Image 1 (cartoon, rainbow, N blue to C red):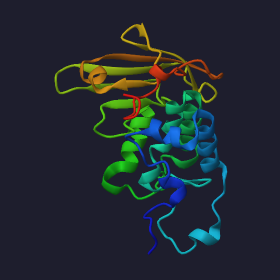
Image 2: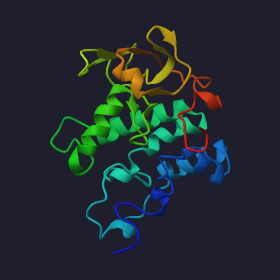
Image 3: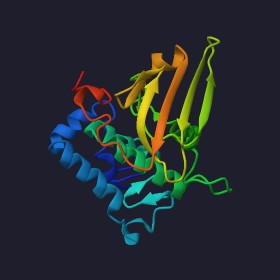
Amino acid sequence: MGPFTEGNSFQYTFYVPHDVQGLIDLIGGDNAFEERLDLLFNKQLSHDKIKEHEDIAGLIGQYAHGNEPSHHIAYLYNYAGQPWRTQERIRQIMDTLSSDKPDGLAGNDDVGQMSAWYVFSAMGFYPVAPGDLHYSIGAPQLPRISLQLNNDKEFTVNANNLSVENKYIASAWLNGKLLERSYITHDDIINGGNLAFEMSDTPNKLWGVGDKARPPSMSSN
């Protein structure tokens, strides 16, 4: 038994969901952080290192979607002002590691987390730090979803022009007002309303870039 469970130091480097900005600062800034994320997804994991481990599944490079400690990582590009990279990664994970077949989940659905990641990500947002009450925006995978809330209100998400090619968010609107930030809040959801995305085959590299447009972190509050 090694010092890590369901991961290694590569994955657990990113397990600071409450203070992603603090991690970005430690790594050396936005560009260095983006490079480290890319390295995680692009660097192949040697079979010799995992041949005796039965629970490693859903690999994209070193990223192991079959193990829950990796589930927030694709959303971390948002914190470095690169939401379009998150959108690319979410579609990559969805397209390569999910299906409607018996093996359509990349790993053990422990307490429903594998399914929860899929449902949240299909809607277009994800709670990177549970209890933080902010949801990082990803890449919606359905043209429309509706949440019927306990307070008799409804929260809907529309992804206009969504297609295989149109995987990028060109613009976003919350209750009819332009949304410049790459996150929504829990109040945005429970108060009811509509989140609308205009999808495109070209990334909008100006959306969600500024410091105030990024999901909050402990170091940035």
